[in-house]
Image (tube, rainbow, N blue to C red; front, side, top):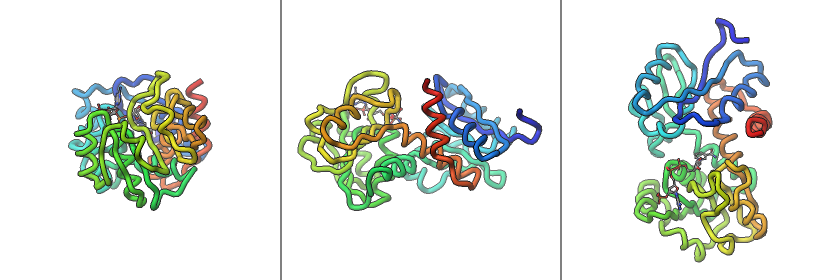
Length: 270
Ligand code: NAP
């Protein structure tokens, strides 16, 4: 039971829907016997400034920031760390010495998830999409020394992203057919609660690692196609789990219990 000493964390997003973050973080707190509680707050854009003022006044320890607030929150915190500034989005606000510090753990989540299957340095990677998730994934791949191409339905957005972050090239999605690659990451929302893939199965390369940022459903059409083509599928669940782990570690300073987070994700989806 919460007491006067219980510390509070949470997630702000809109609409709140069925976020699994409270289940994951509360399970991790319980496993490590940390006296903290994690809640979801449905905050529409017009209330975000008041919500962050509330975080400040009530002394919340950490707030995860999700759609649609990842950019707007950058103007509301005291500091934004260098990685988040370069990505252009904050998904984590942590209290440090009384100041609210914005950071981004999506890129760490993407890298750590990929590293379950492959090294990243020196690999040829293709990222589908040019939205917020793409920026974090491309940034992470470049940080680890991959060569990255960005493909997007709206080519101009891919070109802008590639230029800003220093990726090797940008093109439309059909260019995947001609791009040799070791790693493919889907960051488009294609496949989210629908049984469609962002690319034809024939374009998937045997032996490559195929990660889908989409985690609902857990096994998307892209991941099924990847398995059928002899590629190595990796679900968006792992990117979510590892970005949550990085948030947990940022605040607690302790190693996150990955299996606990992953099991809580599974249970929350049942
Ligand atoms: P976003 O900023 O809205 O970007 C959406 C992207 O999807 C854009 O590149 C858009 O292309 C593309 N797209 C949308 N509909 C399309 C269609 N019918 N055909 C082709 N491309 C289409 O969204 P986001 O924040 O980057 O999130 C994208 C996905 O990643 C979501 O499913 C989200 O849940 C997931 N995600 C997962 C994690 C994780 O931890 N696993 C973290 C963050 C996000 P245009 O530029 O042409 O519009």
